[in-house]
Image 1 (cartoon, rainbow, N blue to C red):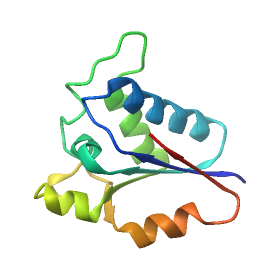
Image 2 (cartoon, helix red, strand yellow):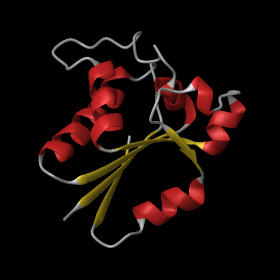
Image 3 (cartoon, rainbow, N blue to C red):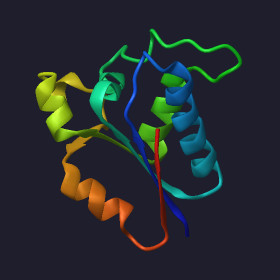
Length: 119
């Protein structure tokens, strides 16, 4: 089975990139792939309740729905350093979101049969 690891590095400042990252993740989930989405930089704010509400994009599935799908059927991770820089802890995040560091990302991305994408 193919695995997708996606890193999202942008937030509300780049709504099309954010939506594309989560749309691709949703498509991969629907295709039966294992999916792991990582939020870094300003994208970490998407893991806070209401964080996706400001991002609206015509002709696109609402970002909150896509994030909920990833949390429910895949994995959503916030970069530990990015969370710390923003004063975010587990209790600040949506239920089901984990915090992990670069070593965990590298391990996931370098696993055989994995396709890694960065947005």
